[in-house]
Length: 198
Image (cartoon, rainbow, N blue to C red; front, side):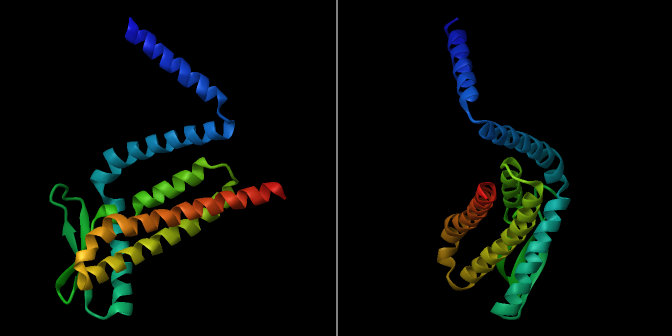
């Protein structure tokens, strides 16, 4: 009985707080929950096991990294596919330097989650679809370039300062990528404010 009363009290409290939120915040939250539900419903049961989207994006990303390394670091970089042990559909890529391992590009490194996160925020935020479309294209291209630069730097670290690679991979470079995504969101929202105040 007490548990039911507590539950009813919590639901009533949440309901009252929800009613007090501005409509813009409500729309943002509803769209965010909708996007998260659709993405999880598509990616985990369908796209991830099938791996075609991840395989393609991982390959394209690795090609861009390898081409950049051969152009700016020095010749001798190649890429080879590597089948994931737990999922034979999943093909990662390995970057080698003169036939020595330099970096592995697994699906979490291909930037797909970053694209979805970035686009999800744009879809949730208020604004015209034209501006969202423009910011989507520019942002995706920029995130792709930043991700390639991040992996390029990881190869450089692996070859020259391997003791720094773990920290850079898990903390420093990840933070830099998210800061750039956040800045794009801020620019999008600020531009919207400027348009509204004119």
